[in-house]
Image 1 (cartoon, rainbow, N blue to C red):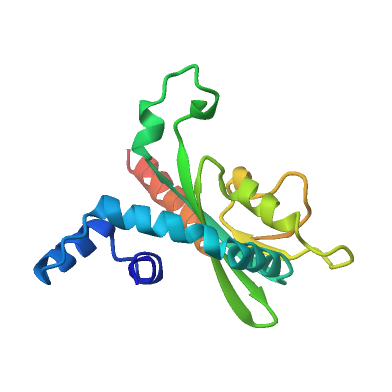
Image 2: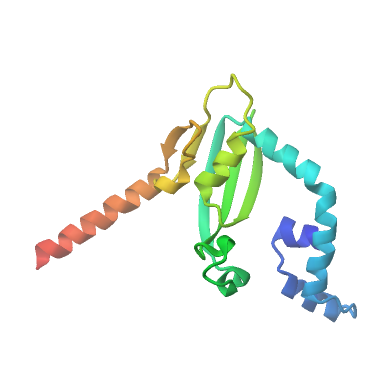
Length: 172
């Protein structure tokens, strides 16, 4: 239930701690994490199959959001894993036979690298999937082919910014 509340509905561990406390059940956020971590190993086969199924999709949407992971910020500069303190959460929505599948990856890999990992599991003989993303170059997997369909909302935003800038410059 703790994992479903956290990852199924987005309820943070700290809020669950307060909820449990109000019900007379002390369950600190750190203990909740330990419970979920122990249980996660049991669902890895299902998780891996979900990634494999998503790789067969005809349409893949992907986007990143940057975030800070405190443990990465504390690592010394010489640490290989700490090369670059950037961390990302990549969301991927795969459509296969009109069935949506949502995947999330958090770590040092950005959307293009995560997409490459997914597409390595794509069955040979399938045509390249359509990949919908914003136009950042790091969102495109380097070594695997997709049909790139950049997001029109992002493109429109760039034109709107350009028009605003040209109006400001004309007014000067």
